[in-house]
Image 1 (cartoon, rainbow, N blue to C red):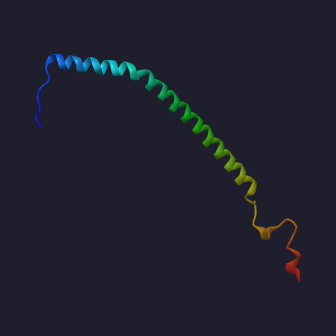
Image 2: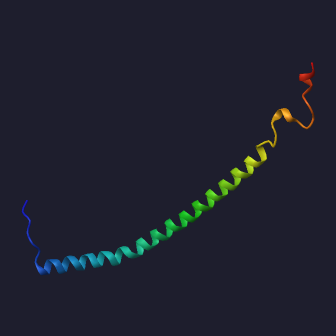
Image 3: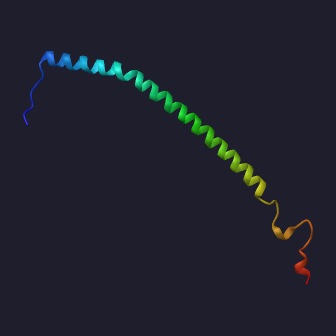
Length: 80
């Protein structure tokens, strides 16, 4: 493979091509950035809701005392 140096005209043309590409890609990248930002915000809301739901379910299902400490006394089966 032979490597050669670019001429000044080629360097200028390459710079112009990159500038043109940057101009074309800038609005697309801004749009993608906004989509990703919105998706991140939606994901954050979803996670917050899931955490709140998990805390509510845990609070509702975790007994405040062991089963043997029933407020109704021992089960009738244990008296037999």
